[in-house]
Length: 236
Image (cartoon, rainbow, N blue to C red; front, side, top):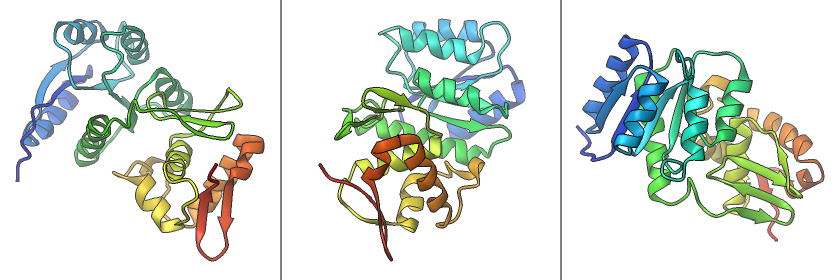
């Protein structure tokens, strides 16, 4: 069944096959799709008509995807447009840089069109709910900014992976509530967001919690283990 939607999606990629593939699948979902093949054209198209979301390849000739993201997020007129990055790079640093610049999510090539469509739908849904750029969540000296995809402890930024960020954000939205490992997987994994990190079993949550606590330093103690149940983030 086709989903009727009025959202405009701008797809930016220098590979014609990918542009056609993404456009075909988004058209089926009812989105209005515009495609361009360069960073320069992406900037022109965005400023000509503001899209509701941008699917942006990082590996572009001339002005690359990270620079496009940087310029759009620095402009008040375009800073609120959610960006889903496409990348074939194995270097996590590029993904981290994009997220720090304000990108909402990322998908690595080769990708499943269904997964990409689901990610786009989820990002747009978060925006409709006001969560993507919502208020900062504060637990003592721990601050989580959903829109910026940023976590700070005592005003110092903490470098988290996409998986770690989603887990701590999920826990922080219900401080004091206890969640099982499977609930954390189901809620934080969302639309296959952890496939690229092989985050597919409930026991993997324990590994992420160890890493999270280490990176959060003293604030890592706010994540409590509830024996026989799961985890919770301390309430204020």
